[in-house]
Every structure is written in C-alpha cells, then in structure tokens.
Image 1 (cartoon, rainbow, N blue to C red):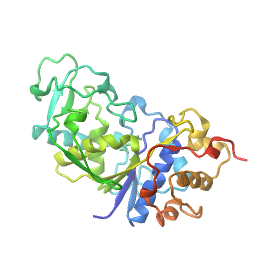
Image 2 (tube, rainbow, N blue to C red):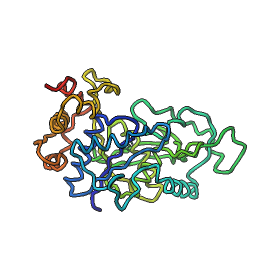
Image 3 (cartoon, rainbow, N blue to C red):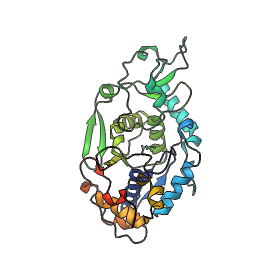
Image 4 (cartoon, rainbow, N blue to C red):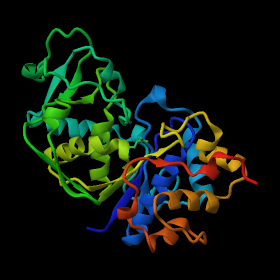
Length: 316
Ligand code: GLU
C-alpha cells in the first residue's frame, strides 16, 4: 500500500510549537517513504471551534514551508478534508457497528460525555465506564436524557503497531471500558471520526503527539470492528516548558505566530525544534524534504522534550 500520512489540527486556537513539530515530522515521514501527506481539519465540536483559527493555522503551516498534497484548500480525491463536512461517513460507520451488535444507547450523565468530541490530551480522560447501560442495547426506552451511543468493547488484547516500539498490546476493556461514539446531542466522538477518516483517506501511518498514545488501542479496535486493518502509529514526545510543565497556551513564545512576531525565521524555528528531537535540518528549501533524508524517530528523546531555551526569548 502506498504510504499516506496525515496532519490533523483542531482549529481551536493558534498553532502551537508542538503541533508545528508534529506537522514537520508527519510531512518528513511521508516524503521519506515517497508517499503523500494529507491535512485534515478536525472541527468536530462546534463550540470549541474558533472562527478564523483554521485559516490562521494553515497560514502558519505555509509560513513554515510545510506543504500538503491534499487538504481543505487544495482539495483532493479523499475529500472533504474538514470533519464538519464528513458526518455522513460517521453515520454510516455507526450504522455498521450497530448492525453488528457492537453498540448500545446510554443515558448516564457523565461530564466525560461532553468532552468526547475532542482528542483526549494528557489528563483529560475520565474514569473507566462501568457498563451501567450495557445490557440495554439499541432499543428505544424511556431515556433520562438524549442517549449517547457507546461501543461494546470486547474483552481481550488489542494489538497496535508502533513505528518505533513494534507490536504493542493493550486491554481496552480494562483500561477505558465501553467508550462513547456519539454524544446524546448528535455530535460524533473524536475516537470514531478519526478512525473513519484515517481508513477512508487510506492513511498508513499516523504521526501525532504522544498524549494520544493511549487512544491508539481504541482506534485499532474500532478499525478492525469496521473490517479494516488500522494504520501504524508514531507518537512524538510532547514539547514542554523548561520546567517540564505543559507549554503555556497564552505565552507568545509557544505559538508559531508568536515566534513569527518575535522575529524568528521558519528555518531557525524548525531547525531548533528538530534538533531538540535529535533530528537535523540543513535549513534549505522544503523543510520536509530536507529532513526526510535523515529523519529517524528512533533518535527521539524518551519522554517530554523541553522547548529550546532560545525560542523562549526574543530574537536578536
Ligand atoms: N485533532 C487532534 C488534535 O489536534 C489530533 C488527533 C489525531 O492526530 O489523532 O489534538
């Protein structure tokens, strides 16, 4: 199968340096394999989507010199490339799972259900669902509130191919239990949408932040229940502040547009970030093609990567 990678930003604010480095690595991995890279905008949750953020993020990616073979602007054969325009595919997948007896309706009230349309980043996962509604199936009943749809997670090991670690086995039933595929208000869950899209777009390797590592077994399981083999996964260690804490979202130095305003050049910015991950950019031409020559994720540091000190100060 020809290599197809993707970068899947959520238009919920400015493009973060951690997202920029992930985009660089996803594009370099695709170039190295002689494949294609797709940009998919994950605007699944209307209230979290910030108007203008998609345009700003795409402009930042262009400023960095990162190009996509397919995406919301250039289009392509696997479009549309915005999740808000792909609901029919999610509905069809949900129908398929329901026909296979893999889903049930759940009217338990849990704060977790509200959050499921967004990718669960570090510390955002709720507790394991105890399966209260599991026996009740998809039949309409007197619901306390519009019901969510949950996946009936089978017991047993789920295997994932990690591009660095090789075969990894996890137990989704133990770790998270039956997870939500669609909220009661009709909004599709990140876990469902991302799997449907990765399969429909023919993605062969997912390159993304390490905080989504724990989502990979759920996604591999869903892919197989939908009758397909999941892609393999490469998780990029998180970029953190010098103190090891998450990069402050509001700090100017933690976004691409902020770095640009501080006078940094794309080559300096990507060069410093790549170095922090054990990678080398010569700083000439297309950064993804440049990095593709030497890109080796086995040289990623183990664990979080402190943002290079000079990116935290104003450019000279
Ligand atoms: N849209 C997600 C985010 O920006 C990424 C999801 C993924 O790569 O699977 O956090």
